[in-house]
Image (cartoon, rainbow over the protein chains, first blue to last red):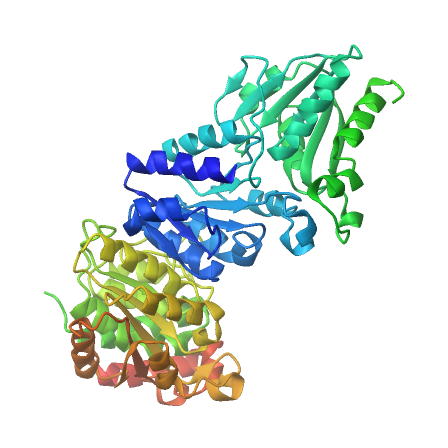
Length: 307
Length: 272
């Protein structure tokens, strides 16, 4: 996903000299391709995320489209006031890119887990939030960001995520994709956890269950006009690699409420009680029921079938 | 007819006093401290293209000590950026001018400030864009000395030096007072010039109320041509111009009562 971001950004930057890349001294072996190609549009600001965001806002004020690259919480929580005041308040087209969303940095521990980021970013004015589920999404999301410049938060996985095959044609590129069809249950997912949801839906299909999986890459603003008519089941499971409060599910609940839409909703999220545990991403996901076994069990519970 | 920076500053001091008195707002001492520095910038030195202020050809002035809002607005209006009548509404409900420097309501203000330590990084962004475009415009950032407690100040001091931003000039309102009083009793800043020097900046020190000296030093900093950013430490007096407000921290907070207002006004009117 990281490589896909860089490759797509370079392609876009070839035709748009407003696009710039700033890094907080992260992305070794990744961002150099951009630096080599566009040395006058690349700045390593050092380990100084707060200043980096302000610098990006100054560049945006000067007509550029800066992308700020870092990992986990460094480009979000570390510099939240700079994002709030310098970028969002002034409505400047700075895109904050965080790699390793959710539990992506697994064994590196809670300091490196981006599991409250959507909640923090969602509270800010003027911001668009993208949480792509696979490399295809990343490319489409980037094109969308450049077409609609605004304060933006782009939440990426790490690297090596597979392309998820889309089995239907219902999609709005860079925003919402229906990945599998079905009306027994609708799973709404965002980010790289979507892959687990699709695998579970495929496995349960062999047991006769038709599960619709919708990947929502654009969390803010949520395209409810496209999303709500697309949901084909009255039973909805919301899956996010984020804590319970304020994140993706909260965005959906707010949208449902505004539209007086009342499906039967279940949720999976990162449990606060598990934040001190050590392990790989998939192990940590499992502690919150976000691995394939956990999602399968939850689906079967909702569908009224024993696992 | 355009006014000299000294005339702008004298008018701005009176306006600021009236604004703070009428609104019962805070930060009068901070405004009186910085008015001379920004009068020189807006009145003498900075070339801001009023028709396209965001253009890379236009100089930029960021007043990072956003609490000096009354003084900043007064200087901008007396420098011809907007009508003086707007000053009468300072801090009133629905007004254009609020208690911290706010963008988008009146010309001359590229960024809202108020939380300290934001102006210098923003200025670096503006300066990098100008360097890349090879324009000869300058970016000026006006900071308070208390603002130098902020980590972003020193992060940015490293960064501006690293990128050789000779089009970036910082002016520090060195009135030696912050929220609880003496800066040196709060968090020691001295040896202050040496700190900036060691970060790789051209360092100048001036009397921050001497317009001729500030102007001359700004021009010197502009033509330094050393591939370094410049900082001008402007030694100032908090509350400058009103005898009983000078160097008294209480005027960071308190608006004058009727009697104090009349006395202060008579002192400022006398020096106009």
